[in-house]
Image (tube, rainbow, N blue to C red; front, side):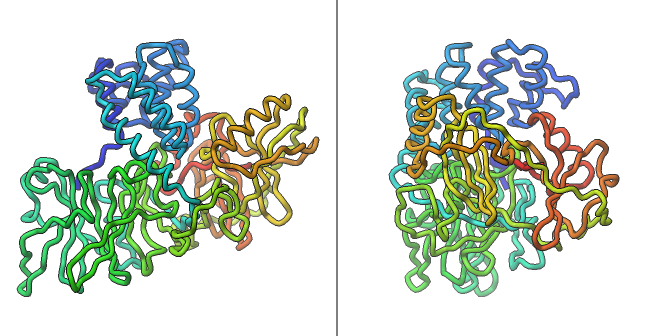
Length: 548
């Protein structure tokens, strides 16, 4: 299977003004080694190396630029990357390219209005041979379409996650509770162009119609990757492949098909113009009697995003299954997750406000609801109980010298700050009923509060209102950089973890222990400790914003 390179645009651009030399990873970053990682699309290592170089030469404009671009490749650092790119306006020779990456970051944050404005500025500044110009045109179409059809987002629940290789993610879903035993396309069905491009597709079967589905470039690849079917004849021989009609395929890529027998639905991923950005999940109803495929439609819940959803494989009904995506991965690593969502909610009418989507409690600001992993997932790391180390979660009494604030809403889970406009400082009040009341501020004066309130309204938060926050309010800090290690049946023994890992634990209502490492001062420090945990065998760790 072909490995999808997420930062091919970055690589092409960098080649025009970085002197490149292939070099192995080094503990002593240099401009050459940082550029090498940047060119190969390793944004994590490039970010750390440029960060280290900046600590020595903070005024180096090139280092500032490349560090900012690498920040936009990670969801936790994207806002910082935006701020840094904006600060570089007029500095260096980056021009329209800086605007392209700035707009791309806004697009990834679902800020379609701001992304459109900046993409247009980038297009006006582009040279005829700018390698990112075609990408700008596609992104403009996607952002404009997303604005036109934008509906209220529907929450989904992520039950478990694991980082996987995009090249062979399908091997990770062969678990005892899954009906899938996915295989690769037989070599005889791969075209010469498939082999030239290094593309090998996983296959899916429709047992009722004796069809095998797969993706291929075809003979010449004129329309990119498309979905094909091949009839399985009575003697087990495969008939000649047939490209599915335009109701399924497009001039863009279609990959990872799956046939869901219970609903007679063909599910696949495509990066066509109607996606929110990157690859999205689409589906087409199949009529066996006529052999027809209805016009495909995108999944309308928050399953899709402006980043990449590479595939979806239902477990039973359509509302529960395996999602292959890079939207929650650390520096866009590919994550395989078991998710569930209410299929009926996908056809909800448009809601003008961004508040109270489910049961009058869940707002769109936190559309992804994470639940605890099942105990069985963590049995390999069930460590001895040490109750004497348990300490209640620490809270901080923050004195607000100025009480001018804005109430954004009340939520069942702490909202994802990356979904808010840039520059918002949040603080959260935990209510007795377990809900989170979220405020923005405090602000120095009414003029400043009015300015930020207008930003929220322009972003769609029409129910925000001014709030005089209480002095000496017991508020929990919302921006501590931490790592979630896992959920355990007993409190872990810190001596079994790598040296220097500081733990804090949250006791869940079901008696399990959610364990975090941190908090850390910056992303560079967090990345270093995360690598220590991974090397120690804790491969399911992931970044969180947690409260010690």
